[in-house]
Length: 184
Image (cartoon, rainbow, N blue to C red):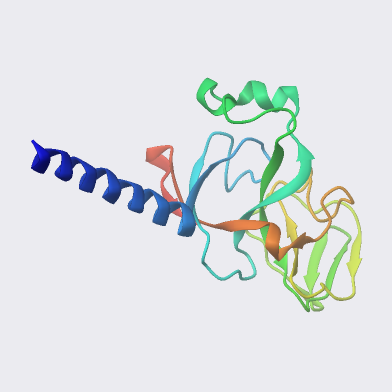
């Protein structure tokens, strides 16, 4: 009997270690809005790496000061609603356009990084608004959604530049829906 209990305890301890390692280095997030269309759509689930380096064009998820609205809460499954409230801060998912040290200019619907027009085959509309950032400060990033007409991102004072310590991770793989699995 003691040997059986010991085997159960070993199995439970092993499972807890695996969960801890997964949560430290990796994560999963769900897309809840349309700001990354056509790349990611509502309901997509993505696997994120919390240890990957960040590069131009990467899709990242990060914490904001925006709190969840009642509408946001209504879109969550009943199980997810158990873990959040209207005081919970919203995480967003966006694409890295400007890295520390970069110059970012948005003019006439085009995006320039370090005075070079970037080719954005992942968007299907021009970029609205005008933005001129002489230098993205150290440990900060300029991010935008792929659906530029509706995305709340670094062009907005509400979001602004994203500080490195607010970044949760880099999206690496869309695994849901199954028929739409792809590396990001």
